[in-house]
Image 1: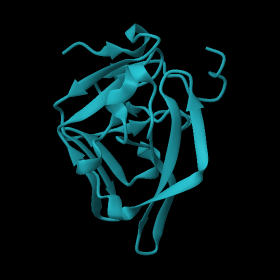
Image 2 (image 1 turned 135 degrees about the vertical axis):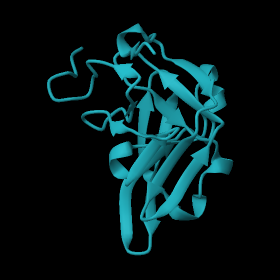
Image 3 (image 1 turned 45 degrees about the vertical axis):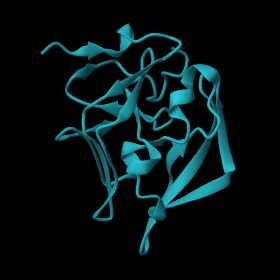
Length: 156
């Protein structure tokens, strides 16, 4: 199977549904599990997966109302901490409560940083996190870079 080059992804980003099984695991619990995710494809970034709120164990997430960022395409994101027992992962997920008009399908869907969970999967493949942790992309065997995010790549 040919690999997708992140350099073939568009800018502004393209949003597409995927039927692949997307899972997020933390502290032995499944935080998210869906076959109804969206994947966001943007030049130089591995895909970011957005999971419907119905497929996320919200009881383990705490909103950080003071933490927000702005994306020129998607709008204002809010951030979430995962807490299970004594384990915490700060700002492990984000969502768009009021996304920009071209990305309305993402409303209240959750994206997770692979580096801030114990494991994230696309189908049965455990993903690698995008370098630098700013963009939150998930790297799989089917994706090729180089990927923006590592030190020295912000000017790309």
